[in-house]
Length: 501
Image (tube, rainbow, N blue to C red; front, side):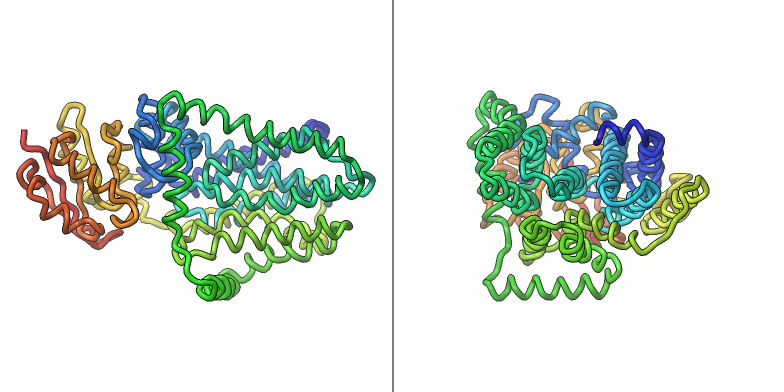
């Protein structure tokens, strides 16, 4: 079905890919349209990937507690463009083109091509709604979820047999593994639909097909897992990878009591309805009404709803919440839009296709507030001078400078823009309390004592500011060469220290 549809509708897929590149050109700050992207997370991913492709081992020689595959994706972007996000813009746009194409294929299971085309375009707005400056780990996970949703709904739509194609299960195994090694808790999206498939096979006594599917899923999961294990084993880092990515993240999760978790879920449900009313209602329609109405097998229908509920719980149960955490459940907007399309009448004409493209591109551009910045900031690239610009002007004077950022992630873009390869394990300071992970501050103290880096950035609102600002060896080995108050993002003082050579 996929191959046939691609051949028949190849022009639509080409248009969707072009639309993805155009949309992200305006709506992702990794686009060459924008002077830079200072978002700390993506600069961290980029420079972890840079370290990885410059022979530094993840977790043991370059530290962050995110999953290894997000660093690999950004490392590929680094290979394309060493000191900018041009490579990541290309990767992000290709991934979005794939995502919109899979949204189209999903819609085509239930509606004609003009409706599927409009649904794919409309879905792009849901994907944009919490994407921030672009390129979050959750954004890439959403792409893999959309692929998974297509295969689930294609199987659930088939009323003739319970038999499941092992080749598709192989794909589910690969998708699950990829998501697991980006952000492991979001693998919950696959749990209930896969469980429904296995129960269907057991009920139908298709034991051979069940075995084949279990083996296929396992092989798919291992296709991603084994190369990572080999990489870490070869670099004597498997134990550290487990301790950081699994154990540290488990201890870092801020979960309260059962009552506090329930309160978080209820309050955030209310906030979604109040402030994201139309968007959230369409997602709820896709997660609840769509399976009830369009999936005949009740077990399969319930599995889709449970997939949404479990994903919602995983996202919102913790006390800490950031806007881009909500991106993964946007996958359920696709079935929601399919339901709405049943009440709309469209002509299958070129005019409708072109009008839809223009309308959704305009809506997408308008959705991003950072596009509303002054023309001088975006086009003429004359943005107000920041601490990043000032620090860069000093650091760039040195040949092969080295840097450690203790500024609570802020300022990570300096590594990117000056193409500085991290030379110490804890080259940045993610928001980990000393009580949870004392090794980071202790190691950074040793770096200062041994004068292992030439420059250090320190921010006054960092949790460790007082410690490092008053550290005797800091003031003995380093001198403050620039001090700037940032009144735009951090509302704090930033200090640039230079080693006393």
